[in-house]
Figure 1 (cartoon, rainbow, N blue to C red):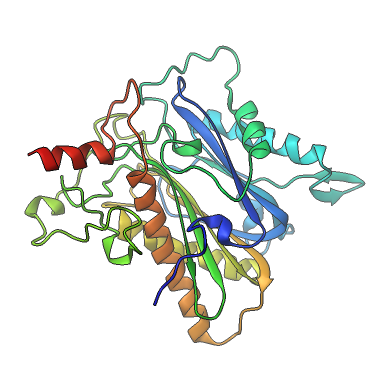
Figure 2: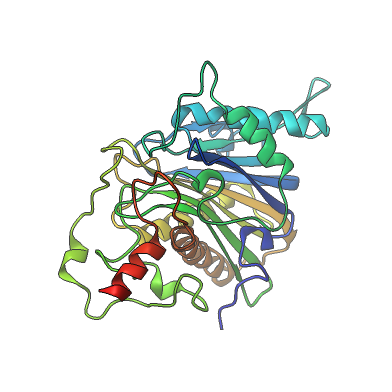
Amino acid sequence: MIQTGPGNLITDVAGLTVGNSDDGRLKSGVTVVLCDEPAVAGVQVLGGAPGTRETDLLAPQALVERVNAIVLSGGSAFGLDAASGVQAALRETGQGFEAAGHRVPIVPAAILFDLANGGDKDWGRYPPYRELGYEACRQASLQFALGTHGAGMGALTAGLKGGLGSASTLLSNGITVGALAAVNAAGSVTVGETTHFWAAPFEIEAEFGGLGLPSPIPPEARRIARKKVGGLSGNTTIAVIATDARLDKAAAQRLAVAAHDGFARAIWPSHTPVDGDLVFALATGRKEMTSDRQTAIEVYAAAAATMARAIARGVHAAKPAEGDLMPAWEERLAGSRDA
């Protein structure tokens, strides 16, 4: 039987904590994944409109192998400032890559577009994301909120509010795989106009409603849903896939590649030219992973399934708020019951 970790969160992967910081007036925020010890990292970008920082160094041939943190932020390109705030917090505690007698925290980051979501973006000369990043770092713990929090605060999808989601899978060999996603996709995470999630086949213990797939699948489910806010430029799902298995950089990148299959299982359509879809991978190395191919297949399959669940959980957990331009999933559910 497939099981989740104890918290069904990415922090079930030993060696990781997560912090959120957000602003309801701004309708935006930041989420940071902190590594207790520097972790091997990789990245895979499959969307056509990414916004990133420090992703080139994650290539398998690049010098730096490990990172101190990963940042997911709202704010479009302005949100890349959040990594500077996280860097500042880590530098205060002496963390970072040693270079010529200095400590340089390695903090790759990715952003999603949430500027046109009804929030007040009149922040003056400098955007607030550096301070939000610093605060998110200070808030990091094993437990953190999902839905309308952190980088998911102002996220939107085609037809519903997006959100911050997370999930974990405990494999029979003792390895844990965890996922974290800020879901702001151009596509839809539900089947047509229903409350059923595309990720339903992978759901564990009704973690996002337990509704399964509709039967029959409605014909309109095949149509390409269009986001009514932000036009064709206001999208992107950004995510982290993590494991406690010991991986090198090439294997970490392969883990990120596999996790993108979870996007395709949970969002229709995904990886479009107007999405900046990206997955970071982290391997904390707390568990040895045997070199047989069957074990590798199980880990990579778990990466896809766990990511699909995290995406659905992010939208499922979103909450209504004043000034919303789209309904939350729970509002659609209530409407379907009243109909």
